[in-house]
Length: 202
Image (tube, rainbow, N blue to C red):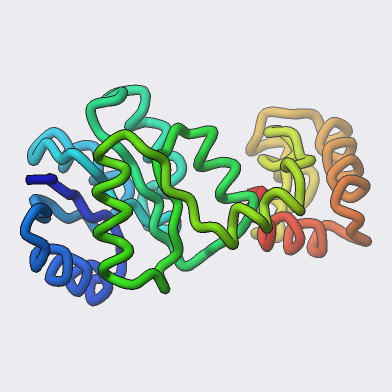
């Protein structure tokens, strides 16, 4: 029996997935979490083999949780990102975090069950269309610090406020913003944030 943990903040979606997966003779949903920062405790409680993990959740996003799971649980638990947001940048960041699968939520229930079995068996499962899109887009051009600055700018913070938040000088923040504008081809900060977010680079 493959023990599965579902982590998704949309209750109806999560409960529907649990019901569908429990129809499979070799899959059992042993736990659920509706917040990213609740996943590690739930893993310790129910000891799943595979985790289906959404990206955008309160508390912590799924990519951060996936990274923490690899650091704490190692190869004992395998992670499949299951998300509405099929963005090439998300795929690249998920693979860096050590996930075993990345699929979008329009997947059929039988295909999801098959993905769980493949990942449990040690294989990697990646949505084909997203893999092709990711290859055509190329790697994330932003450094981690440039991404941090754009994330902070997304809320409308000024260069001075971003500098205070990130412990940087105002000049350094402006340099990071200028570099991010150049790399994204944006005309201003708001456009750079939108381009980076759309591509999953943030």
